[in-house]
Amino acid sequence: MDRPRILIIDDDPGLRRTLGDILRGKGYDLLIAESGAQGLALLAQESADLVLIDLGLPDMPGLEVLDRVKAAHPSIEAIILTGNATLDSAIEATNRGAFSYLLKPCAIDPLLLQIRRAIEKQQTREKMTRDSLELQKMNTELKALYSVAQAISRTINLEELLSEVLRALIETEIFSFEIKGAVFLVEGEEMRLAAFISLSETELEPCGEICSGECLCGRAFATGELVVTGNCGGHPLGSPPVQPHGHILVPLQTAGTVLGLLNLYIPPETEVNDETLRLLAAVASQMGIAITNIRLYEETRDSSLHDPLTGLANRRFMEIQLDKSLETAKRYQDPLSIIMLDIDHFKKYNDTHGHQEGDKLLVRLAEILLREVRKADYVFRYGGEEFLIILPETGPDQAEETAERLRRAMEAMGEGVTISLGVVSLSGSLQEKDAFIAAADTALYRAKEKGRNRVEVG
Image (cartoon, rainbow, N blue to C red):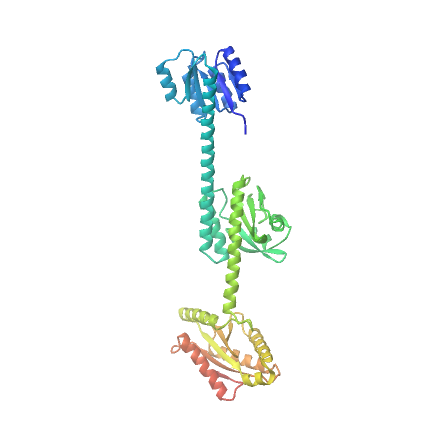
């Protein structure tokens, strides 16, 4: 801890020398001035904890010196010394902020006691001020973390997560940065741009994939350490004519594993203190947990909406997509068709070849269906050996042609396995989802009745 420093302002050289020797012996650092102006000049350059002020200085009244000391340095304590004490001057000195008022010549022990108490008061007030500032800083940081946590809890979408976090940080006013940035996610030895906000194509062009160790982002990825750069020009997110800017690159980690990187844009040469960096590291930890949760959610959602055997979307997903397709077709008066199909004599095939071969047959059929339909079409495993295909913007004739192409492709597989198909298209009398599916199922049943390996239109 630094030694307390006392400024003596007195025109009596003998008193200055005597007090100086005593106070130095007691472990105090000293500043010495023989006039009010000299003392104020010293305080403008040096810090002090306590000022001893002679009331009768040659250049200005001691009370004026007291006023100017308190105005410029409110935390400094002051003791007034005078050889001509009056009750009125003592009261006035106290009212103006003096800690105490002593008559010269001073008894040493009472003076030392007053000095010790004044410095203790000053140090206590300084500590309270520091503690208050620290508490304010902690409250601000907790508010920022709470705001970010709230922002994260509002979304399970990665792009929305980025924008929500950026805006939450801006609202806390912890430090200055732009509503501009990107999130990269780790995939193997590379990072892929996963989400961004307010970045142009020029800025994004170099950032599709970043290898470990290359550019600033890659180095932050490789080391797992937060990186701050004051002025990059066009690097790493962009190239000229991008305006000069800085970056804060924050690795997103959970359990010591880097999952990705948060790239924040800051104005050029922005000073970022250690407290802000610690706050951003805490935010990055929250984001890392959020990304893990989003991935788990997406995996769970995908597994709940897809058939594990064929990889096709399942019946639950079909219900969702067919609702959307019907709504779109009705709104824009577009044609819409569906195909319901299944494998002929599939039970017999299973009994003959075994269930493992039956599963392989289902997988091969799924591959054929995906190969033969358009990218705009949707293929679902409806259940068992049944499949359903949604054909957006497809009328009856084109849907029938598609079904026939699928039938021939399966027949051409050359294993004696065939499929039967029922086709139905949206019409004035057929508007509802359940009726739509039932009509396709009826057409499929009719194909079965008429000998299988054929297409029937409902």
